[in-house]
Image 1: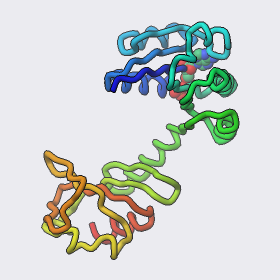
Image 2: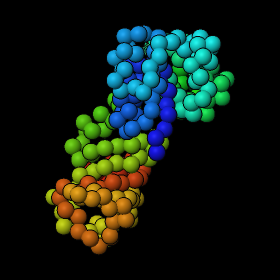
Image 3: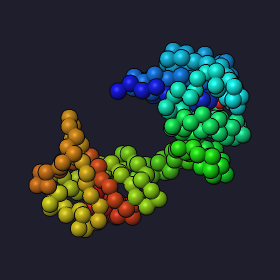
Image 4: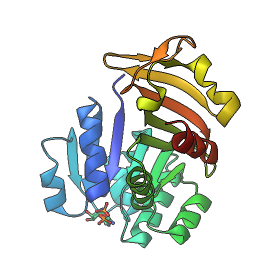
Length: 218
Ligand code: ADP
């Protein structure tokens, strides 16, 4: 379903969110106080606007309160990010998602009602470290500080073995939720079907258990 988003602050984060949403077929209003940043996105945003979002009346004129989902990508100017978030919550925008620059910024955003807070640089650093330390990990989603979902590459060691034979849940305490093969994703993997080298196991579990599986079984 097509959705409408407004993105405020078109730095590296805001502009890549804008491109991705456009690519997915959604409508995006892209806003920045810098005209050059706005022009650079004119071919991917549905509408663009030059505005200083710390100015409440400017936001009102834009009709920002009609958006259900607004993303604030202002990072460096923490004061502007906080003020924009405050205005958006005052306007009762239901979903205000904000990029935080550091932990203090995060705390303030939480207090003033930001609905979701991102730390893209930190998260990316973490993910990259995870990938760097294992060529078997293909993708990674953090669920909490202890749990994650990981895509792992099936190696020679488990080639031609089934989930029953591997007995992963009993031995490692983690669960295979899907198996990706060349042309399909099996979300209800048959426990007796053989896994082939090169298949991708999508697994959920405690990070320690997932690492034990990765080091021991693969
Ligand atoms: P990134 O790290 O993602 O590149 P930046 O903090 O460098 O993020 O970029 C933030 C963007 O937000 C810049 O393009 C800047 O012009 C814009 N911006 C900063 N303050 C305001 C404001 N008050 N109103 C609108 N846009 C703003």
